[in-house]
Image (cartoon, rainbow, N blue to C red):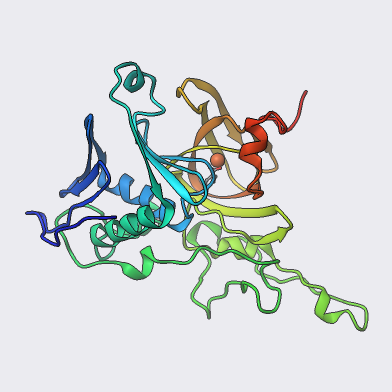
Length: 322
Ligand code: PHB
Ligand code: FE
């Protein structure tokens, strides 16, 4: 369980501990300590990563905050580690890993995210669209850090499902997408089928997203999930895949650094332009860089059997052979 003694340090923040890990923050940094070492991460970077881990329920596979610290999802329980996917830490035998029930680690991260996020700072926003994370304790931004991730049951726009975004419901067009047409499709259904046909303008929907690097499920067909997202600046986490992911670059440009998932050895640098499609293998980790706000479609297979199928050799780590 998370421990906090409810006292605050000289910068005004609470400290947290769970298992062998403890966390504290000062004006600029988060400090992480574990039985064999300690580590610092800039607080803005740290909060952007914690925010994703919280909103995504620890996501697919591994969420590396940087080359040292992160989490690995086992869907029900979660590993938290330091140096586990870093060759130098492993060689020096200072790497550390501990497993936690999902709900315990989630409660710890939620409490830390809420206490350490000041008024005016939104960890999901692009840096030019939010205030500073630095400084001593100054209020909070609970509404931002507890945002629900969009997860459509069937598709955005279907009655009773996630609704499209409008000025009226609080989603103005982002400054980067002012040229995106806002018309909605005209649906001409045969008589009797009116309630079975649905369509929406995905580009208009994405142009109104107020968050960055946050794939949301806009449609689901069994395990096939369309998870588009709008990207600006850097993907805060270095994601270690546990399954193949397809990327379709919808607008603008994103560069990706692709590394070996376990050692961090460089494997590729990928520049994606509008219309480009990439299949990211299941044994890599990657981080993206988006100089301008861009739309990216991430296509996931959400089946919980995939990590096991890959481990058994029943599913490939590359989706296509050339
Ligand atoms: C990914 O790791 O594949 C990923 C995560 C977040 C994004 C885009 C891609 O916004
Ligand atoms: Fe990924």
